[in-house]
Amino acid sequence: MKNYLFTSESVTEGHPDKLCDLISDTILDKCLEQDKYSRVAVETFASNDKITIAGQLTTNAKIDIENIAREVLKGIGYKGKGIDIDFENCIIDVNITKQSADIAQGVDVGGAGDQGIMFGYANSDTEEYMPFAISLAHKLSKKLTEVRKENIIPYLGPDGKTQVTVEYEDDKPKRIETILISNQHDANIPLETIRNDIINKVIKQVVDAKYLDENTKYYINPTGRFVIGGPLGDTGLTGRKIIVDTYGGYARHGGGAFSGKDSSKVDRSAAYMLRHIAKNIVANGYAKKCEIQISYGIGIAKPISIYVNTFGTNTISEEEIKDKIEKTFDLTPDGIIEYLHLREPIYAKTTNYGHFGKKDLPWEKIIKF
Image (tube, rainbow, N blue to C red; front, top):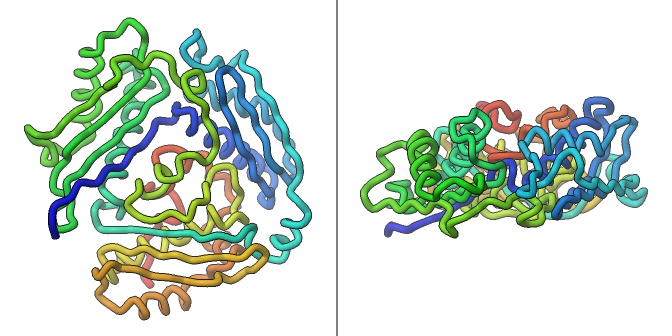
């Protein structure tokens, strides 16, 4: 195969969209801590110095949504002072209703909470069976947060983005063509200081030197200034980083977001299950890369369709793989929830740096099948 370049991006936990995702997922976790059968569909919108939280909750849990939002803002590191949102004094507007009875009557009997298509993917690029570019972009974003919170680069702010362009040869990562990082910073810090610190204390601490060469390009805060961040700099909304959350564009996406949704919503639970299956197809040696699609109808328990694509890398036929999937896994919503233990309050730790590739999540477990 010819050489090609592929790019993926990630964002830090202080990015306004990720702030909204984390508020929504923390509300979900707080409900599940008290009532494992909570139905949650919560959206968060952040703009300027105001947080709006809206959606549907059907739960016996008693939670303080405003306090949850303020604690999330505080934990991320928003301090106000005219450069980002003030966690203590910002306006928080809550508009929550109960789940529609029309939807509930289908979910109550074990059907899917919506129609839709979901994808799962894995390949052998990395030890976590994730595409190389998104894996590295997440590690860089996470490192930006670490060096900020540990005062290694104390002048950084919560809001940031990373982007990695990888050169592939024969469908394998060969080298890194470009690394782009933009991160919020204090007003009085020279760009050259920021550039040197991020290259030496972030990039070179994360990226294996064998992928870097004299032609690798580094773009650090290319606009020259990034002082105002978070919702003061850009609006945020739950579910707007679906490619960051999944495979960085290297695999297809059904379009449904994850955060703020309980496991009866197959947008989330089925995507997790398909990641688990695809990863284990690769881990068990049935293929070097695998993408799976399934579709659901609202109120219908079993998938309407299952599709497997191994891109010619399979060691057994795709028909055999599909047969193994159908014989091994219960792909009804209830079956997925039970298998992956999705009524536990685990969702806030999925929000940032990708929902896939983290060893401590149940869908990342490697099995024999």
